Amino acid sequence: MKKHHGLDFNVRWLPFQLASGAPAKSNKLEMYMNKFGMSKETAMQKSDMMRQKFQAAGLPWRFTESDLTGNTFDAHRVLTAAYAHGGAAAQDKVCELLFHSYFAEGRAPSDPEVLKAAADAVGLDGGALVADASKAAAETKDEMSIGRKLGVTGVPHFVIKAEGTTGEHQVSGAQPPEYFDAVLASLS
Image (cartoon, rainbow, N blue to C red):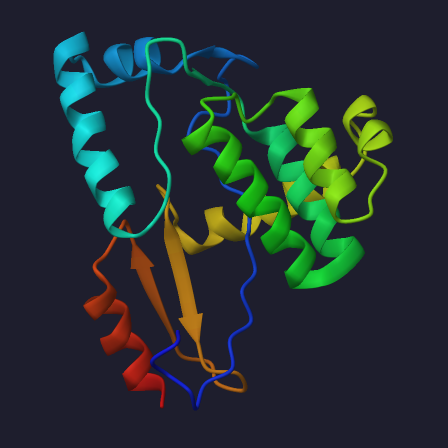
């Protein structure tokens, strides 16, 4: 984005659940081993590859035998509420806090303390939001339908379009920066 000075960006995080039936909390290593049919050693090797990718991007990475994962719906509720409350900047801040908690601290995306702190950080009443599962739930479910209509099957998934046009570029999966440069150059 920094390379494309002539473009203004409006980033909007929309919800998508890879495992909507996941429990609130579970062991991340065990989940990967079961989901992908891999040994503990293979999972740890893949983690080392991810650590290198994160480090190359200047981001922290942690993957231990005790790290947690879990259902992401409540995290998506907080993101949806943050956008409604403070727009893209508030949603970005919540997203950064949630990503840090998950990728750098090994905490579950459903951890009530994490969700409360992220909501509080952008001026929401985190305690009330976390305590009432109906808050922002309908809006989050509505937003999830956008991904289904687009045919999204995984994350990350980007929809890039120029304002005022009907054309769009969809980019699925982690792609190298050069790929995004080409897509953004085509919009200039």
